[in-house]
Image (tube, rainbow, N blue to C red; front, side):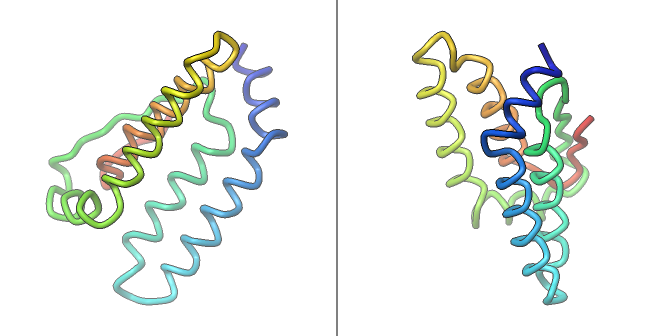
Length: 118
């Protein structure tokens, strides 16, 4: 299931999404202030390439100030968007696996600093 899910995900938008996350991360890394945030975008790119079979482990308290800053600036909007996407995908039976992946992204959107994608 993981292999088939990852292949379908990659073909139907995973590659494009990962490239967009990488471009956004590179643009943020141009400035010194944006480097910590740009590196977090690369975590999203890694996860968006092939999310099936991967786990997101969050440790908010490794970098609480950066995680709080992330959540206030960008995280809350990403969280709402991913939860809405998960809800819309889970309405149909076919979309449930994709909805579960959207919930992984929502978990990462809350506190990416110190999070591990395995």
